[in-house]
Structures are given as structure tokens and as C-alpha cells.
Amino acid sequence: MDAEQTIAEIESLERIFAVRDTRPLSLSDLAAANRRHDEQQSSSPWFRLWQRYGICCRHESPALRLDGIEG
Image (cartoon, rainbow, N blue to C red):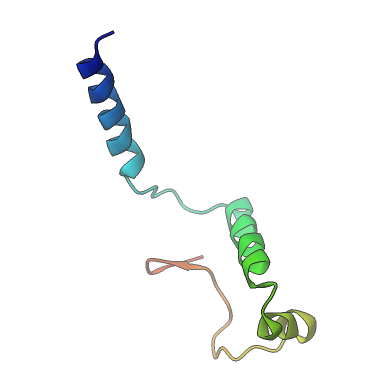
């Protein structure tokens, strides 16, 4: 296999992986996103207060939003 072909294949794969995944989120995807969010926010005293007492300053119910898509 020559170097030019290898480079072309790598560039092709890069283009494929750069395309946005448009599949709808599954329940396990949402659960994983919520887990990651909770882990990232775990050091915040406001987040711990919300987790413990369910206090929230949002006017609407919480939902996962990705580029205008509500989950």
C-alpha cells in the first residue's frame, strides 16, 4: 500500500466522522448525558442543593436540548 492511498483513506475517514449524527437519542443516550452532567456539576453547591431538595430556578421543566432538538 502506498503512502498516497493511505493518506486518501485517512482523509476519507475524517470526512465520514465529521458528519453530525442525526439519529434520535435513545433513553440510554439521555441517561448517559444526564449522568455526565451530574458528574460535571457535582462540585457545585447549587447543583447539590438542587439534587438534594429538588429546588430549581427554571420556569420550564428540565429537558436535554441539542441544537434546538428537545429530548
